[in-house]
Figure 1: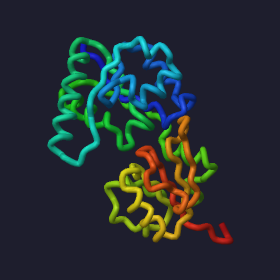
Figure 2 (figure 1 turned 180 degrees about the vertical axis):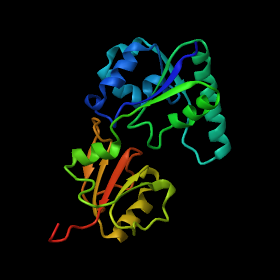
Figure 3 (figure 1 turned 180 degrees about the horizontal axis):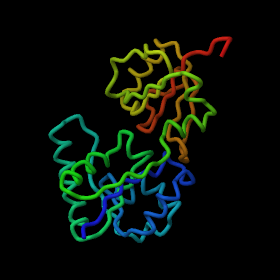
Length: 232
């Protein structure tokens, strides 16, 4: 019988935010996969091993999935990763693919999961705490209240957006284009808070556009809210 592929979210950075189910799946299975060239150097590993120390003694599999806008290169990387995982699934071993945050939100494991489903393998996604929920909690910032809308944008891909819709915005993947993102935020006249490396040792919180550094890291999450009225 073939194994099952589990796409498991480890949360945003704080190992205490990992779910009991994520911990159990790591403990119960041998093959654990990480997106990156070296498993032990990935952020997902560094988070998970703090909650599950025995992870260090598992079969750790690294699949390289570098960030790129080259569609052909992306396809090659995803196909190669799927081939690697299939070798374990075909042998009857379950595979636990660890990913930051939640596996349904801009996750690298989704590309592999789709391929494994197409090849006839069983897959399951295991939810984790998202970066934007963790950042909102960390800064005591309500994301939405009453009838407000919430818009989630991968900022690096949506630099033409002017944040004109009613409601509040989450801007993810902002780091590499922070100069342009800051211009959009300044023009929006919204209340801004940004958490860089939420839940990690090098976490930083910024509460205005002016405070945000141009060289902010990849794991930078921005919450942009409509200014409150007197009746709110």
